[in-house]
Image 1 (tube, rainbow, N blue to C red):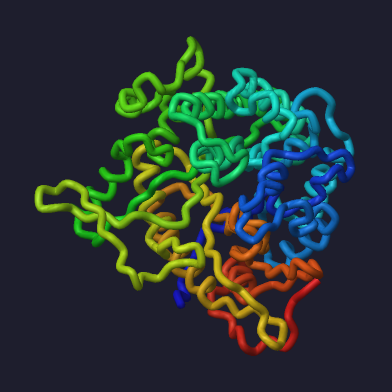
Image 2 (cartoon, rainbow, N blue to C red):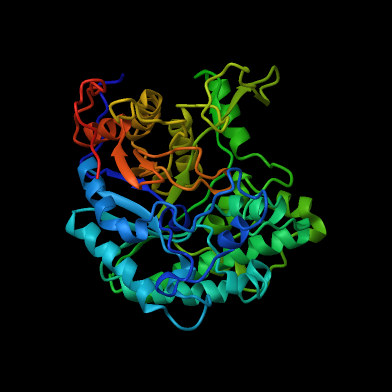
Length: 467
């Protein structure tokens, strides 16, 4: 293990979650209405283990013990999302005070523990009532999102100073609206999928503007958290580095995970022309003022990064993908483990867009099980954390403005269409009893945060840390 990790004192150390994956209490509890994910979970075969998020980790009732565990891990920040249908059951109009009160209490609990809240406004749980009115296909959807955003910001911005608008539009549009694998389970043609994309981008712009107009804090920090294709060079030969850089920003025909498709609208006020030519008649229909609205000033770019493609320079210098061997290390979902990902993505993105960066998601899913003593000795996650953070350390040392790191995730939870089998957490959850146990990786992460990077002796603890 690397014993030399050293990040600035101001570095943000956190963990991240999403409302539907964690909270539960979606079935009318305290006025909460359903989202598209509740609908999707009722579809036969939609979730691999036949499960749903109706209870999840019961964070809605157990948030105090979860914040206590965050405190025990030494986190100084926590990224979580608001469930739109909990605070506005119809998606627009009346605010559900009991739902809003929950987030009030959560924020207060975090601040009392010295943990800074970072709020994501949309992490996929679109209100079912609005889906039944057309969802993201409806031209009014950006306005719906703005109205919801204003209500949340009015309520929380005296204490919440860090905001993210959308989480991973490429995922919720590609898998939710094109392949149908995730909620709301649609299989739209390109023209309608691009319409959804443009409405989501307009919603992002409206939300940024609303945060700045409504915030009770004079200088809110606003960003968003996309996911897109990233690359790493096969070697550190300058030719391979240049090939990887070129490849990362190259046009990916029809691919919603195209880097520029995700970032250029927000930072340059235009969709990449080559992508618009590819979409042709299916391309977004842009009205006067749309791109100015989308290109709101952002304070940071959030990066959700788990893996990267490996690229080398071909004989003519052109980028070539280097396939990973069949026996290459992978996580439980088959994603290759690429520790250099954080290093090269932050370098290339800062060079290209010049914005401060923060890792809003990074983690590994494993088949974690407690041993006979009740401990979870997830040594592979420890190695993952150490190796990925070592790569991030290089970027920090090179002066790239990386603000912090949010591990995905705080605890095991409902992993969307995969159900409850994959486990991403620093904290193990026994779903039958809701018992929480800090894993060995959680103790390792705590040591990193404390500046004590020595590998913990994961076999010597006599008692598992639980609540």
